[in-house]
Image 1 (cartoon, rainbow, N blue to C red):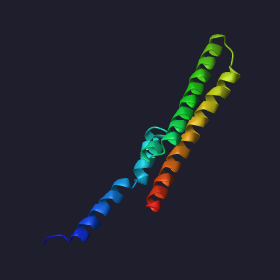
Image 2 (cartoon, one colour; image 1 turned 45 degrees about the vertical axis):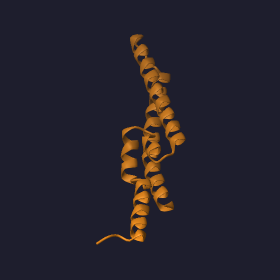
Image 3 (cartoon, rainbow, N blue to C red; image 1 turned 120 degrees about the horizontal axis):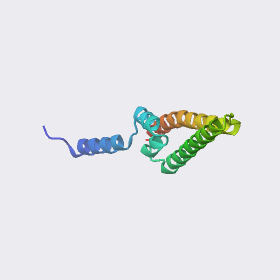
Image 4 (cartoon, rainbow, N blue to C red; image 1 turned 60 degrees about the horizontal axis):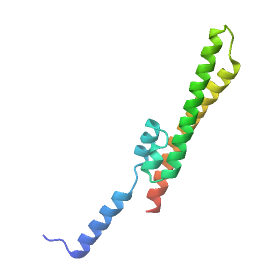
Length: 115
C-alpha cells in the first residue's frame, strides 16, 4: 500500500517538528551536569554562557576563600574574610545550579508549547 503525497508530507512535517522539540528532562540533566548546558541544548546560547561564566566566578570565590582560610591557619588565626568568600561562592554555585536546572526544564517546555 503506497502512501499518498499528502500522507508523505504530513509524515515529513511531523518529523521536522519532532526534531525541533526539546526534552525538558534531558535539559534539566544537562544543567545538573554542567550549569548552563541545558540552556545551550535549548538553543539559548547567551543565557547558557552567562550561567557558565557566573558558575566559574563562584568557583573562583570558593578557591580564593579556601586560600585565605589556609594561609590564616598557618598563622593560627581564623580568616573571617576567607570564610565569607568561601560561603558566598558555595551558595552562589548552589543557587545558580538549582536555578539553571529549573530554567532549562521550563524553557524546554515553553519551546515545545510554541511549536
